Length: 416
Image 1 (cartoon, rainbow, N blue to C red):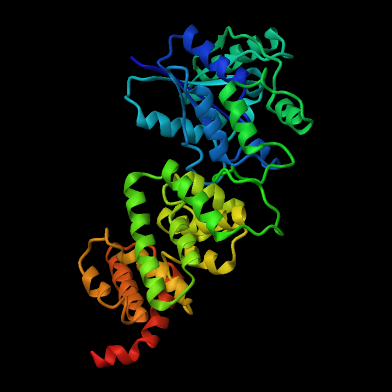
Image 2: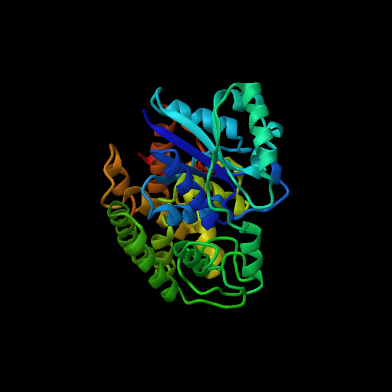
């Protein structure tokens, strides 16, 4: 029989007290695994602004990676709305073998208030609990609560004989704001992550430093050549080989089309390199960035569409690029009405670059150097027909773009 514990919280940031409680519980009760679950939105902290969930998750992953049997989970980050422990435990339980013994691991402070939690009665009836000691709480107070709740709900509640740490996430954030060290409060990987991204300091931009590029003010102009070099380096180090081949294909075709239609090649190069920069980000990270950049909520949980909006926002934020390039990236998936020539080039290059293979691709390719509007029209028509057959979501920008291109190519259609 497997024994697994789930430990939830904000982890903003995670510290050595969190990790050592998990390790102490694992050793004492011979647990096979402790799952660490950062909350997307905690019911008792709705008025407090937390670090984006994907960053808290990445710190947990870094902190737990050296210890066998500790695993960070994105289960609550994938769920919209409040992060209720009852829902999380039910979801995890349903994913495990029926004979798995499941516990919820939490500190004394949280346990003493557990009967105020959402669906507390069901949560306490259906689960076992492990309670870690926290400084500042009397043992007799905890024992009385354990006896009372255990008797009332007929569940198993056990104390963890853990080392007590006088540490809080609030203290860590305060130290960073004041320029004080935190190396004695967090593990080395978490310390490095915080320093690298300038988290909890006045220099923090609200998102991690994806491109490892220096922070710039709105008045600083960065050359397109410099941006293209930075994006190339990011792609080399962070993008899969399959996606790299696609980006290379889009870059090659975009530049060929740019020469043919006599447009700015450096703008096309930056847009081609950046168009799928967010394509492989996990959905919960895309959702975080949608909220951060105040992108339309209709793109939540739609990675095939949201990656273009998020990628455009990230690149604009990091490099202060002009809106022409932003639009080239932002609409490369959906298209839109009144697209510029450059936007059309990136849109069609993404659709028919040499690695693309689908029924009808050659019919579209034959138009790209003759009539770009016709090529875009056929590409949109193909995409919307495919999405309709799949009963998939169709962005309104795509519907408007199709009508706009249909008018633009009306003469050519009649001629055929």
